[in-house]
Amino acid sequence: MRELEANVSNRFSLNGKVTVVTGGRQGIGKVVANALAEQGSDIAIIDVADASAVAAELVDRHGVRAVALTCDVTDPEAVGRTIEEAAQQLGTLDLLFNNAGICLHKPALDCTPADFTRVIDVNLNGIFFVAQAFARHLLAAGKSGNIVNTASMSGTIVNIPQGQASYNASKAGVAHLTKSLAVEWAPLGIRVNSISPGYIHTEMTGNVREDWREIWTEMIPFKRMGTPEELAGAVIYLLSDASTYTSGADLIIDGCFTVV
Image (cartoon, rainbow, N blue to C red; front, side):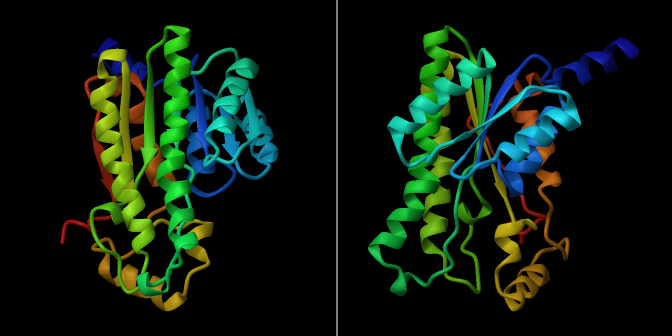
């Protein structure tokens, strides 16, 4: 029994792995990066802003190697260079938590072309550019690997009372892009899954109107918003050898919001 327990525990280990985390300077990305480091993974944080303090924290807290690289995920050439730089600094790449994203609370009738394009560029195009560059690196290195994209329950339902059609559309795209890449890349040994968080307490949701947060909480069967820590286990599972037969899945983590 002890041997079986040890084997199960080992499947969740990320020792010896290197994980790229996009959008890792704050919120979900930062918390999950800490959880991955706790499981033994070295971390390359990619963010549009300087995340060197987070990388230093990972080194101090978990004793792993960590680097911070600045990159705009909407620029495919910059993404390709940054992925290669991460591999160069850490020696290799194995896993990707493809998490960078933004949200715009704006009614569809008021949404300008620039508004809509910006959200799609970051949330959908950026996810694709990073996944593509990462997969190209794995193929060139002759390696297999795993990707977890951050979608959202907003790709499954329509949020109220706020208007956010651009965000909802982008996240629905991420969920289906995940399935498409999973099928295409299965023969290459690259698994691709996504998580779809519900309402989560982060810097992003902390800045929205209080009356909206009250409405959301009342609508959630758990009667509370989630925390980034409650997403970390799902990411670890999907990136680890505990999920070797899982690809193309979208794991909704929403306190039952989409069930009712």
